[in-house]
Length: 263
Image (cartoon, rainbow, N blue to C red; front, side):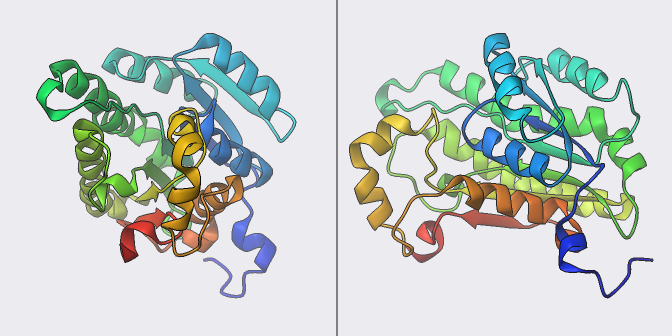
């Protein structure tokens, strides 16, 4: 039984936990990985780009124990391969962060089939496949007092109507939010929580171009009058993964300075 008088340090301590963060070599994924490492987690990160994996592993190793594995998670067989590598030296996985994603902006009149296949495969199918493959390891790690955690990275583009023509992106993220709720109901009795984080504007490779052009306008549209910082993203994921977030499942948490919920 968990001590009802948990100290502040214990509430957020993740020492000894094991995590997989997909797309952890840059942007939001790297923010999340750094936060987990600093909280004591041993983390495996993945990316399609082997060179990016090597660079990120070197950079993040100053914060803790991290291993990078190149994998193209838009393919089911690659999700299966990565899952096998993640659990090769342990049959337990405490935290799965489904962050890898793709976006495609193009006008409605010319929006191609490939924009659906590419985006949906990575943004929606991949998280489902990884949960399928890693569920035995998550079950072994989870208990009633300390469940294993699945954290899906959605988007505020799935909460309000985006201004950009990213039809497949916003639709895939809305589907991921619903998948989060469906899985939360099914996996809760198995001691696995499933929640989603819906980021707003954070600086990353995906958003750099638009923030360079209209960053001040985007920041002004938020009630908090700024874009997201690294600690904003790291903090919410550490919360969800820690004792502090153990009684939360099926939630979609917008981390956007209030943009989506007050527009």
